[in-house]
Image (cartoon, rainbow, N blue to C red; front, top):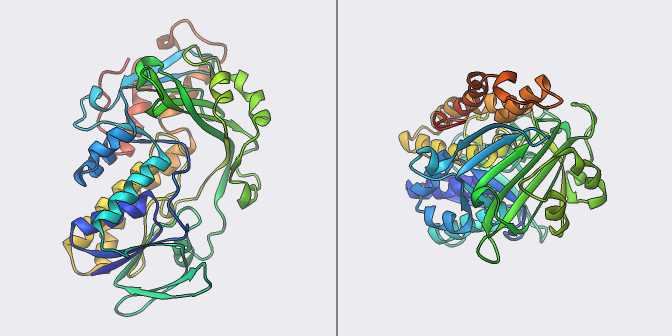
Length: 411
């Protein structure tokens, strides 16, 4: 059996290693001409870290990132709504890890290149179309030199992102991604540790949010490479989307500055952190409506190509990694490829659909929205605003959707 993987991002590279570990040959076709360690921070939940640990990558992950110890949810006023231990501190057998997306991609690319046969990972190759035959799949590719080779295999896995050509082939009438109306600015800088040096701090709900967490070692003891995110509503949900070129561009600090006073953060000098971050990035927040199917015949979708979601609850990369393992197991269980892809879809599509919908309303961070709606001017006692049991129910409902263990030790 041989698979073609369209896309060499986190999902595609993880899938390649999962297949290789099970003796299934594959080639990875990535449109970028080289792997570049770009981007800012992401969080890998313990269920994803466990899968990467199974590939022997845990020591490298821990060296590249920061094992998380605690989560703090606060209102924009800086009042605590919820906090809980995370990762090993919450009793998991593996950590939750904060990491720079580019560093994670570099780590995965290095590991995949070492484990797959030489020439299996092919950069500068863009999928343009595909054709299924009775016995396999043809992938039509475009290269920078103008050539258009055709690759054949037993199946094709579209791990090619939110604007996936593979998804477009399966759902030709879908149209462009859906804009939330939210704009996001992101950056990272070397910064002193806060809240113990391994905490995720989030202030505010869906309409205005500040996120800060460490993603790697700093320049000296007591310092960390620290990621920050500011999200505000720029337009009503469902408004006409920005141009594709505007989805991720270098941001202007002057555009961000008026939004920083929305947040009262005692733990971090937010203006100072933004000021020393160098380049900041501006993103329009997109997802897609879930589709009824990911697979047809010998073609399937994975990661953002299958279930692009808003970055609430730290689940984008995590769910792609879980996809990779389930798909590899399904392909190992039977030689009937369409049946294997159907089994993979049946296991993964319903749960990720639920996460996409939950993330549109804030994911677990909906607990902050709930408190802010009930007490817009602040509170003396959060339990008098919304009981601990009600707050825990919001958190636990999302954890269950995301396949996370029950919440322990929360306050």
